[in-house]
Amino acid sequence: MEPQAERARQQFPSVLLGVLGIIQALALELVWEQGVGGMDRWRAADGVLAGWLEILAVFQGVVVVWVMYALVVLRHRWVPRFADLVFPFVLGALEFVLISQMRPDRLLAWFLLMAVIFPIAAGMSVSMLRTIRAERGDDGEAEPGLVTTAGPSLVAGLAIAVVGALAAWRGPASPVTVLSLCVANAGLAAQMLVFRRSWSETRAQI
Image 1 (tube, helix red, strand yellow):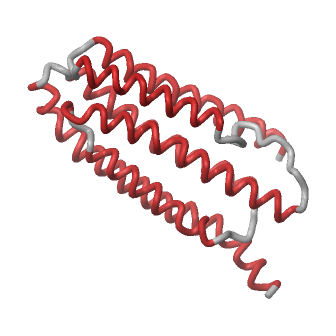
Image 2 (image 1 turned 135 degrees about the vertical axis):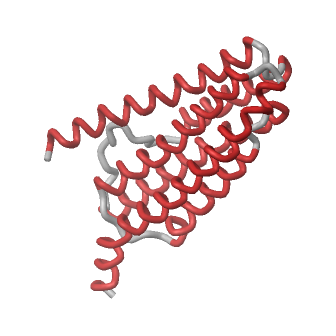
């Protein structure tokens, strides 16, 4: 049993990143087809700026999810649970549904899905870290740059849902919608900066 466990421990990170990379690549292809290819709908609704900001937010979101999981698997090795094998496909399905809602008449649905996806992704990351710590037999140290509790992500998800409701109420051409999408993009960009600083610290320790 021990050789099998060791093989799983060594190979799973590569498998996880490989599967997640394929899913994220498919998501980006859908962004190009549904988002960029659907800009005529935003032009007809006088919401071109909002449409491009939505595309940027989805692109950043795909990258944020990839980097979050990459930071986990590049730092740790562990014997995966069955849930760890399923997580990437659940996340991919949610991303594909999100991309399908990239329309000016689906603003509320799009924001609500955004509000759901990132807490779920963060919860998956937290769950994996807890598994890793349990396998090590200790409480673990703080993981710089990684989500170690679902609390902040839940708050962010609630905030996204609120601004999404406002954006849907005012319509795609409203400055409120543009501002809401700017806030969403700024939050994703800030998370990327946190990840970048975290990886710089990790490289310095190698």
